[in-house]
Length: 281
Image (tube, rainbow, N blue to C red; front, side, top):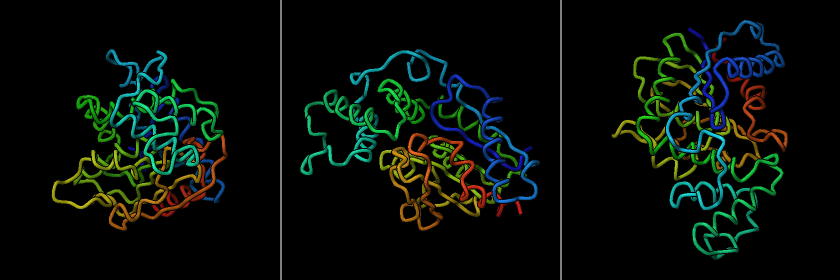
């Protein structure tokens, strides 16, 4: 099996394992070549692909149906949406209120948040419908036990005894964190989380780990490196160290404005490349 395993995030429902392998391996190789890593062209890579699992069932989160603000569920989905909007444009919120200046119920609040996000350049013209679909994919991971189990099973299959590095982007970092807490007989040298939402309270309180354990680096991992772009509204909490028992090495990096959450930018980043180089030797 591969010495490097990659775990994708949201938005891969209509793509493929082959496409992920080509995209991720290419970007990673670029980063390794940039730092003159001698074995850049021959690193073995395994794609932990689960996007197709979102295409089953009757929900819209994996498909092409259009979403509106009325589709944003109260609770978890609205919390994520509002947190992203606050990060994108803090001035749009009243200092004495937890809701956008428009106020009102969850639908009015959701619409106000979506309006903020649609006009921010960070998201590269992403529509409200796409934003909601991606938030719902995160929600489904936690709220549909069978789906979550299938996603984690894909990671458990990909991660083997000879795996040295796990690269996990976006929602993939959440799944990887949970799986690496579960795997007791595997020793991973380095976990690299990229554009991770693991700093969000709504995410952290849903994480599965050993009942008697403090939140921190999974026991199966020697080193945890977290890479977050300065303007990435998904990685709202850029530094995870204080949230995870001081066992994370945080690096805030610069991604292009219109590609602030792009997995390929993270994979080719200097910090990612150096972490991989150190793990592989």
